[in-house]
Amino acid sequence: MERGKLKTRTGIVVGNKMDKTAVVEVQRIKSHGRYKKQIRISKRFKIHDERNECNIGDKVIIIESRPHSKTKRWRLSKVVNQTASA
Image (cartoon, rainbow, N blue to C red; front, side, top):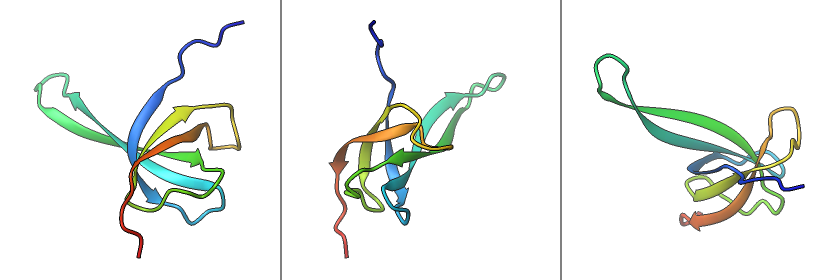
């Protein structure tokens, strides 16, 4: 049985205080229905980070996965850009 293509998103890590979990904010641009103005919409995802490798400010790619907990449905695919950690 084939699973099909999994969704991927690119975002910025905004929180990593939890163990094996990080919060990633993904922004997208949407056109307003009536006025056609471009609107920036952001959504936060809790992701599974097994090795606690992402820090706040990192740009990451996340991928859809099985449910890890009540709110975690995504996992870390890879870290694209790392910020200088102090």
